[in-house]
Length: 207
View 1 (cartoon, rainbow, N blue to C red):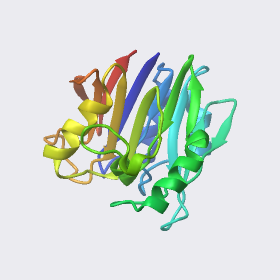
View 2 (cartoon, one colour):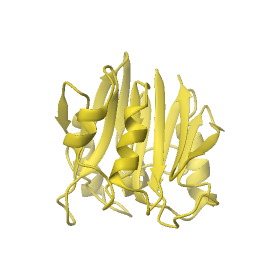
View 3 (cartoon, helix red, strand yellow):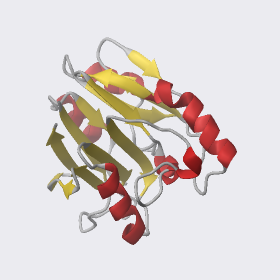
């Protein structure tokens, strides 16, 4: 399957994002976590080509953001984000409970979505913390703003991608293309190339 992750600049418009999405012919396109310039999931579904699925999170206010997996023909609502950082055992239990609803078959691959700080449910070595179980075939991590501590996050994503792919994508709140950590796809520990198209940075892989 072919995956594309896109990271818009903070100054990018919804129209520009929709135009980019409408030209994608990947099996899965991943937007970052919700931002004020993102189009709604309904508008996204209307511009996608047949056979393309997109992750998009829309809504307003903490706890009211809803993640969606959409295509021209379907709109799948997923459970919202469970925790932002430093998960407790109870947080991890809750994430484990809703994990099947965050996992979807696309092109005979099982894609699991860990939203923003939920990636901290995994330790640096790639194991799930507190002995919990979050199985995945391919792991996608849409994030609201760019993360720090890449000395920790980078090796974690590399380890999680062993034998598969991990997608990490965030909104570019720095609003320029000199940054490199807003969109990273790892395939078996190797970072895929990052490209720019106008106000959008993107990366892709085939796996």
